[in-house]
Image (cartoon, rainbow, N blue to C red; front, side, top):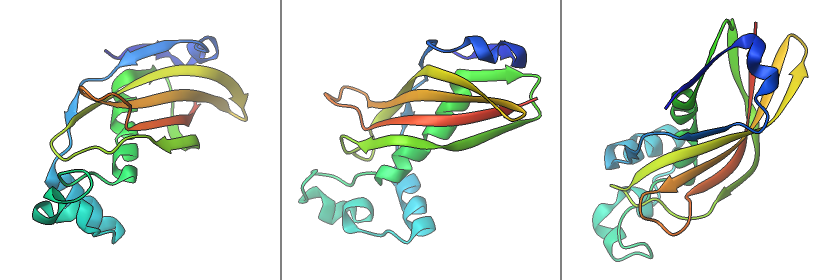
Length: 150
């Protein structure tokens, strides 16, 4: 569910739990495209037959592919009205805690932990957890930094 607020309400968001996104299925096509984009064609990602006998029993998504899903997930959780520019400023404390097997469904939970004023705008520090449906551990745990400018 998307939280929609006005730009002038950003300063009050610290401590806000934005909840969960919808699930998305990670496909082999996505993994292959990511492999092409990053020149990371390791067999555990792109060779489905060989991956069956590998350590995960199937091909897995690249950790950075799973992390990149934070971008569409983030836009699913928060909409800020009255901004001219939104910037993914960076990440802190990123961990890839469990592999995402191709065909798995993942979603993200986000909590805004800090809001700071920056020149011309606000920066939000957001704890993000990308979960694997039915999995005992999350796939990714990270703190995202996002900036909004009026």
